[in-house]
Image (cartoon, rainbow, N blue to C red):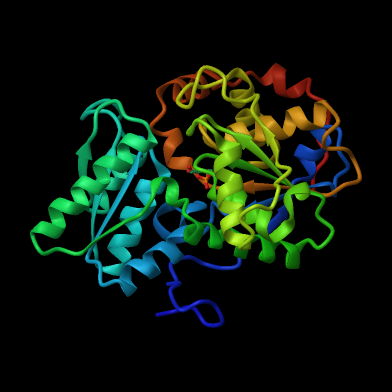
Length: 341
Ligand SMILES: Cc1ncc(COP(=O)(O)O)c(C=O)c1O
């Protein structure tokens, strides 16, 4: 079922367009004007708990089906949102799925892994491995399948091929229809395809990426993908990329991330995750503090999903649960009146 009006290899998996909503209370809390801050709800993309990977999977799964594949093979961290959504896409399309995950059984629990199980994924644990090593094992798995007469399709780490990134070029165009005057869109950078697609549609000056520590050289990866999308291999890319939110590494919860998670939850009722969207919001807050984002210029926060990852992240759960406050009538009686709306 190709999508009308787009290249024939795209298959429909999500619910489009996603909403663009204002965030007036968070804007005020950051010292911005009430109309300055918006959220693009790519956490609500429909399939399998939602998230940014659905837009990429529409393209990569479309190609897999066109090639006659019956098994999807992909890679990720144990709490990979991309792996979870690949498993959901496989279920939706009637395909089998193998997830090559870093780590070993028991190294992570709940969250995305529990959903992987529900979607019927088969896991090949890879031990300690980076994205490159995981990719090599995925190729081995695919070869084993081919030798037994099965047609696999390897979907790259994070879904970030030039083909997958097309989904975010589409998102960028959708965003321009919804907010033609947008000055900056802030986005988490994992494997780079989401930022690359937005850069293709909006230009690099309007996209602020926040590196989350998933890959070694995000600038190079985003530039390569953006060049691939534009068809101009040598085009210089002046990327806006913040590298200041990684902290102790990809899986570690930073203080700034926890503060951002808490602020978004308490001002807007929005749930972010500790690895991607929480870091992106921390980057947005830092950009307001250092004057990179200023009042009067519409800023869009791209909510790329990831909520299941919160439930697979022990440190975040502990901190959030510790913030539960016991009822105390004096504390509520002494509070100044709160504005509504
Ligand atoms: C919730 C979430 N947000 C953002 C990203 C980053 O997207 P990309 O891998 O395209 O850079 C990912 C993926 O890794 C993700 O799972």
